[in-house]
Length: 163
Image (cartoon, rainbow, N blue to C red; front, side):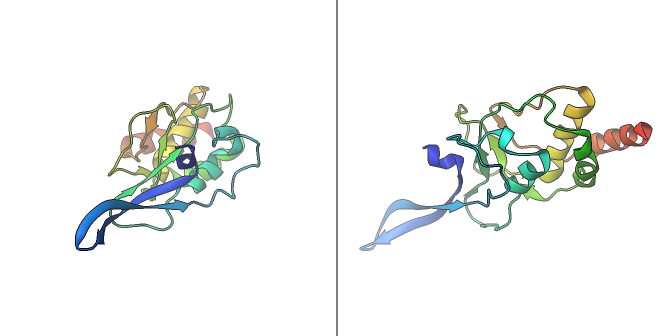
C-alpha cells in the first residue's frame, strides 16, 4: 500500500458485468507533487516541503464529487524550526481560507477518513502557531485541520502586536 503515499484514491462505483454488480472500481489519481524538493526517500516526508509547498501540494484542485478520500500520506517527522519567519507573510494571507485540501495521514495510522477534508487555513493556523510557540510541527497520526474564527482572531492580534 505504499503507493497510497503518492496518490489520492477515489471510489467510482460498482462495475456491472453480465448484469451483476462486482467489485468496486477504484481510481488512483497522482497529485502534482512537483512542488517538493527531490529526495531519495521512499515516502513523502515533511523536509521535502516548505510550509507553503506543503499546503499547495495538499490543496484539492480537481474535485471528484462522489466517494473521494481526501488524504495525503506522509511521515510526521517535521524538522525543528520548519516554519521560518519568512513564511509568515504568506501564511497570514491563508489563515482565513476555507479552500479544501487533503487531510494528513501518517502511514502508521489505521484511520482512513472517508468523508472529510481539511482547510488551507487550518494548516496555516497550525504552522503559524508552531512558529509562535517555538514548537515543532506535529500532525500526529491523522489531522484534518480546519479554519476557525477564534484562532484566526488570536493570530491576527498576535501579528498586529508583533509589528
